[in-house]
Length: 223
Image (cartoon, helix red, strand yellow):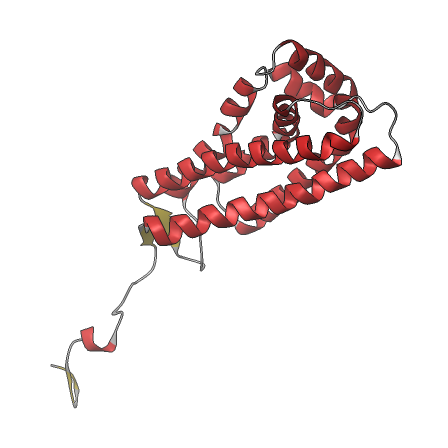
């Protein structure tokens, strides 16, 4: 499992063929990879939001209490699994146009391995920062795109890259972006409005939140 992860970075085309051979013998071979690597962003987010926090202004730090952070991390973990299964089903559905039709489990396995860059870059959750997040998303998207276009012909056994296989990969890429945005937006809305997280702010003077809560002042100042 770890060797496949390293080899996907160094020489992905040969690794895709090896992964496909293993999936032919055991359709659930990908499952430990998906379940374990999906923990990386979830656990990193829990640590980052509870112990480090993020800054909205220069001296303010915002953190989540442990229960709210745990809820967010569990939702993220489930969202990764759900997004992988959903996109794998879409890959399986679109594969009907080809002579070599992979099984549903094999399509889910393909998506699980292509998501490896995103899952590894989830370590950035240890230090929540919007610019770091944007950088990580761009890098993860670029590497995912590379693995997708290189790996799809090899894993699906489509032979040499053709216009049809490139269109197939482009369709999967577009569907992947749609699934990613839809799943993340869904969990954020559910977490914000259904679970009602608790924020802890430190590093600033909270002052008096409303005018009615200020001490009464006489003409010369405070009484």
